[in-house]
Image (cartoon, rainbow, N blue to C red):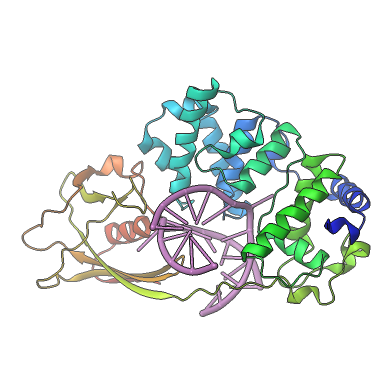
Length: 341
DNA sequence: AAGTCGGGGGC
DNA sequence: GCCCCAGACTT
């Protein structure tokens, strides 16, 4: 039976909306109903914290460069990736442009106000479809993200792993039921996320300040939610080389599944003597612990697929993942051996 | 259902 | 260090 037997959805929604009306934060994407502007924020915020997107100007810069679906659809991929540089998960940027092209071609440049059609677009999953439907169109569609799953697990005192099939289904079902009882779906969904972000936090929930405390069934909120997922870190060694001329630097463009279209220092071919080390740097990325060695170029500069000389004046607008950007900057700035850790 | 995508910030 | 973050997609 519906989970509403456990609490009064309408009363909960009203309490949360009242709290949000008073305490809700002011974000640029909350000041607009432009579906495109909201879409850009949602994609940038996938697995990325708000402060990362806002403090470094990504959002505003993007909207200035690509103010609507049409301009994004017409931009070159290189410019798109360059605007995304530093945000990571570059597939999001490529999908966003693919989406813009689809909206222009299939929907005349206007995002359809239909959750099912939105969900079909590239790069749009259940969360982003719900976010767009509620924030841009005011539809009572649910959203479940990291914040919401934590809030719901505690609210309903549910120790089902939130990353299990059953846990995911339960969360969406509860979120759907709650938003249906809301008077303002957009405000309610925003409130649910913001509650998780500011009060129902991962580490120490601030239950004293919680506007829906009287609805909460959690016995020990800090022990929820439960997850099954455990990540094992893998060590990776990567060797690249630095080859510069009077005109520029040799770089290699990625073509595989990762970082497609972005540029990096060229891979040092396997086998043979290792040229002198110019720089050693370490960085973590998803489940990898990478040690990046930047070597001098071999005496006979190897042929590397996708390698090209990039002129110095073009370097700053060449899309490049952050770890390579940092390593390249360090190598170009200094002489001798450096360590970036 | 599990891996992948291969970032970045906070504590 | 480790965990989390306005997840989506592939196998």
